[in-house]
Length: 386
Image 1 (cartoon, rainbow, N blue to C red):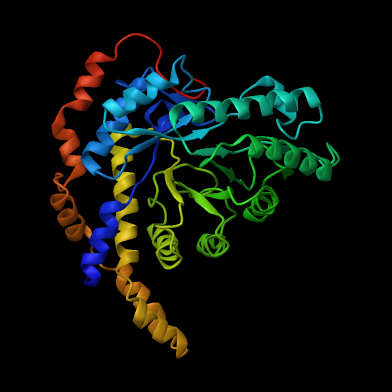
Image 2: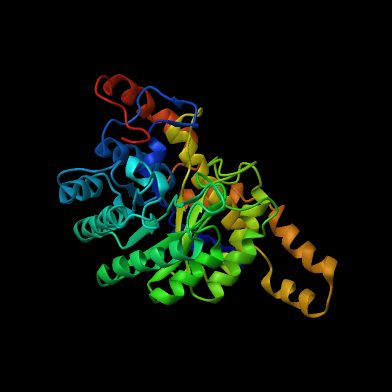
């Protein structure tokens, strides 16, 4: 198989999971901005996600966020997804929007609050059992704002105890994906601030505990591809939350601020066997001022473009340059791949998959945007907290 044919084959099997919350209203800490046609129910979120998959061909699953996507019948919700041509994916927990969690959730000094948080995580595993989801994603807003506010080491002990209880509850084929974040909303200490802390906890838990890399959760200048390479080497990369940032956790469209970084990450994924490691490729974005569905389609396409370029890196030439100490030659190999215009290649891939070569244009011509504006009148739009 030629290099081009191999790249095409890999691109056709790529899967990018879209987040249910990206279809809902979102905003900043100052204002949530409403748009016409935004889903009012989890079912309508799935309807929109199905359109993204229809026009891209590589977005077959949808991540849920509990309780934002809570329903009485998860079996029926899974069937609704299947009827639309998608499936339910990662279950995301929420231990950051209850008044009880002001001082933390699983790390809270009060055992009753910790019990409340762990019970919610166990509820999420119950939902996984019903929906067939295999991944439980955990992000904790836990931390402190002032020196001396709480015992840093004791908080790590509480975290370890909570994670162990949830890990023990996982069923066969289910995984725990632990996310980290440098800061916010805790500003002095964050209980899972970096990949090393997440990795240390996952090591103690067992092989089904893995680390999630959110591309917006790092200090400026952090070499994210090094983290990706290391976690792949240790077989502990659980997946990505793809987004983009300028200053902090901006949750902008992936590849919008630094497409070269996204390429470098995907190069390490390709180099480290990330396509076959079980790593989940998920979006985690908040589309505050742009139209939701076209933005998500564009995000999926950005991931595809970075992946295509990574697949076109001449691995033999790169290895030879590295082995001979040819610094500029090695860099040139990477830059040649990055500077390749892969849009014609991706158009070919889509046509071979029976898709329109222009996903955004196809969506705009479909009339779906006008339809949902006309039909989704009344009720309460979904958004943060709903």
